Amino acid sequence: GEAYGTIVHEIANPLNSIIMYAELIKQTYDGTNKIDPAKLMSQLDTIQSSGFRIDNIIKDIKDFINSKPTKKENFTIKSLLPEILDGFKAIKYSSQVTLNTDEVSALSVNFDKGQLYRLIINLLSNAVDAISDKNEKWIKISTEEDFKFIKIRITDCGDGIPASVVNKIFAKGYSNKKACKGTGLGLDICRKILHAYDGTLNYELFNGNTSFVIYIPKS
Image 1 (cartoon, rainbow, N blue to C red):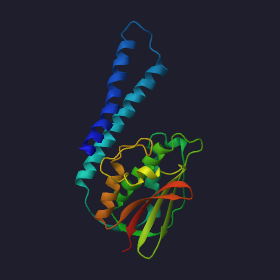
Image 2 (cartoon, rainbow, N blue to C red):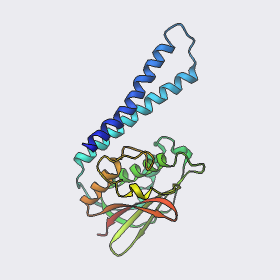
Image 3 (cartoon, rainbow, N blue to C red):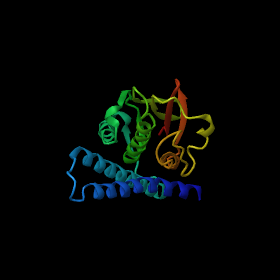
Image 4 (tube, helix red, strand yellow):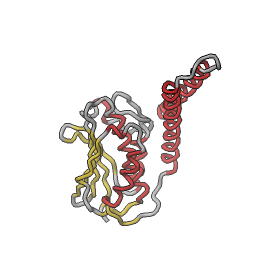
């Protein structure tokens, strides 16, 4: 019930924006007023971004329902960087954020390459949203390993997630706009996919900043 309520709420918000701005455009440009191109483009941008948001929510729901191990292949995380950088550019407002990938090493993983790409892009998208109110916006991707796991760390300039909600952020459909923006469904999907590969996703406060770590078992 809580998860479905969150999903409905998340879809309703951008849908209401689409309806409201479409009606505003109709009222403003009814043939009697001069068109203001800049204002019109701003209103159309809002409609478009709202549509993209609904589309992303629907994709997340589909992934949540259908996620399961598919093909595995050996590849280095570094080899995935060109696709990740291209995908990052497509995230709204990402141009305002500095993405540092200097500490991504040539560690190899045995995973579904497409799934890993989507996991990382999902976390990057969440990070861009979460740091929108920061003056200097940055996100860092780094890699490390221990005796059991290859770790991919996504750290942003945020000050961390409040302790009161940390234990809830991976719950189905959980959403807390003040803690972390997005549908609240994405983190659960990410962890569910990784569990299917005997990995996991954890949150950490890393050097005072918000950090999510992808754990992939060593082959």
